[in-house]
Length: 310
Image 1 (cartoon, helix red, strand yellow):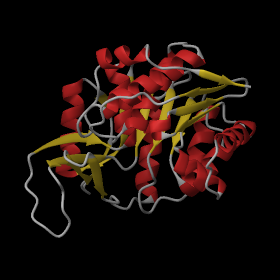
Image 2 (tube, one colour):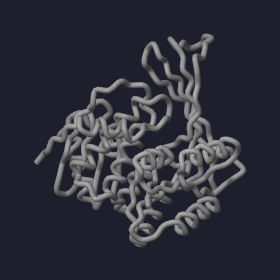
Image 3 (cartoon, one colour):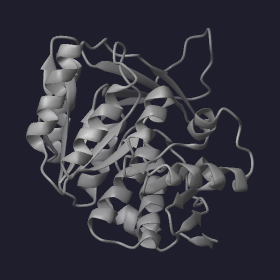
Image 4 (tube, one colour):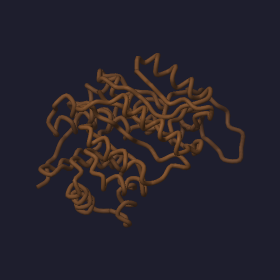
C-alpha cells in the first residue's frame, strides 16, 4: 500500500478566461473544482493506475468535506485527522488565449504540536512493514523544519519506504534522514545547493551528491526539458514529450505517483522513468487539477525516450 500524507491539502478552484487582464473585469468562461495539494495529487494518479493507495493528513471545514467527497467518488480510501479549521483554497486562472496559468495559493491554517502528534499517530496506525509513505508539499505554518526528518527516521525504522517532495529547510533536513526517494524540481534543487544550476552536468553532480548522502533515488523534474532519474548505479535522462498543454498543475506529483507505483510493481528503472514521464505528460493535457486516465498514460508510455549517462 502507498500512503500519502497531506499536511496542507487544498481545494483547487480553476477559472477559465480569455485574455486575463490585471486591474480589470474578467469574464469567466467556466470553472472546475478539484481535490488538490501535492500528496492528494499523488494519491489520485496512483489510483488511476490501479494502485493501492490511502490518503491521510489534516483536513477540515466545508472545503475539507468537498475533498473527502471527491476522493470517495474516485474510490480513493482516506483517513484524515479532522479539524475545525477549513482546508485552504487555491485559485488557478487558466487563460485560454495566452495559454498561461496564474496561481493564487493560500498558506493554510497554522498547526500545533498536538495536531501533528495526532497525525503521526494516525500514520503509525495505518502503515506496516513493506508499505510506502509519501510526504509531499510545503510545511503548513507553525510546523518545525525538523519534524519531517524525525518522521522519516521513525518510518524507516519500521521498514517503510519513504518518498519526500518538499522545499527549503525541511527538504535539507529530510535528506539527512535518508528517505528512499526525493523529487525536487530544478528550482528547488538549485535552492538546496544555494546556486542556480544551469548546466546538465551540474544538475547530475548535485543529484549524485544527494545519492551519496544515502538517498536511493533522486528524480529531478525539469519541466519541458523532461527529467533525470539518478541512483547509485544509473543515471537516466528522459526528454520532455511534445503534448498539448492545458494545465501544468500537479504534473510533478503525477510523475512521482507513477514512479512509486511502478517501483512497487517491480519495474526496472527504465520502465519506471517511462511511466513517470508518461503520467506527468498526460497530466498537463488535463484541465485544472484533473487526473488523466490510464489509457492516456499508456498511450504516451511508448513515446518516452530514455537516455543513459555514465
